[in-house]
Length: 484
Image 1: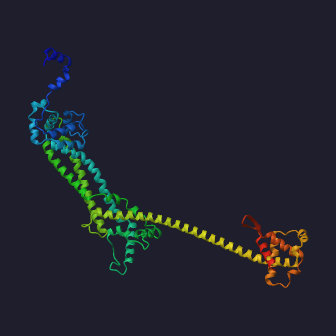
Image 2 (image 1 turned 90 degrees about the vertical axis):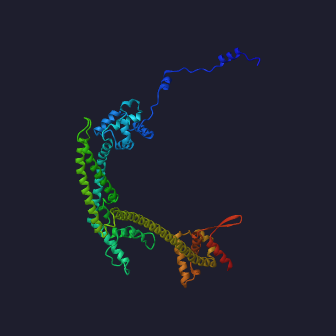
């Protein structure tokens, strides 16, 4: 190519050459640093040790941890940490290989240096096992003691509670009455699990059951027995106790004590001044043995109490375990208390229904009385109107109704006077008095007419285009007059 020249290429290289990074001391150190490879333990074990060192054991040096283990000092070591150490321990073969690398300690990675430290502690595995057992023993003993006490106390309560016994007698009486005539009549007892089935017997209204009936019966007739649950205070706690679990814990204690006793045979002569395994564990073994014997004796006594109370209530101790036995009674007690609460609610609901029914009946009676009063008033008005019309007819026939002078001179009587006059005239008209109204004085006839016009309430009549106020009885009288 004609334009290509060496000068051009050199100028391009100088102008656009990439920058070369300067080497620093840190990068040189990283480059020179060699990664230490694992020589004995596998990568998984190395990873586990790394996690443990950066979490639970963070802040402890290898030498500090070694001293704690030699002295059996568990103040800084929880059972979970020691159990993790037991899980991650290299095999006996690997620990033997690590001990041979004493001269190459600095070349080992951190995880293998930690494993090397553990491999140099005499009998590290049984030592850690003993420390874990010691730490857990006190906690397990503290848990077992109350459980044993609850069961023994519950057995005693069931045996001595008169209220609960009377309640069972009443249930047996009810059952025999309901089963009269059948093959189950006059039974001497019943299975305790029958107590959990009482609520399955429904009443005729299907709203209540046998437990509701029993609760009402005890509250109303035998209130001295209704609070039988108060006599069984430890029953709820006793039913949560598993005898199988207790037996398993006690067997584990016994096995650990036996192993510890055997392990102490190897620690009669300490290998270093820091090794206090023999001293610490001998003192613990003496205390733990005494405590275990007490727990074992109490557990044996508990088993006897359970078998005795199960037999006391007619059950077979070999076929019925303590958990089922206590659970059936606890279930019955809880269901019984629930039935009492439901009875109270049903009682309140019934009271509300009765009040509502009474209020409806009262309102119905009020309306009926109001209607009756209205009808009576109409009848009275009709009867009164008939007597008044008779008086009006007589006044019109005699001409007294047209005497304006008498009407102006004679003042109108009040409402009561008019009513009395009307009643008198009506009585005469109805009884057929021989005295004729024509013989009465003009003033009396005029008073009767005025009373009609004054005391009869007006009624509003609506017609097309206008509204008129008309006295209905006066209008009726005038129509009768026109018809004469």
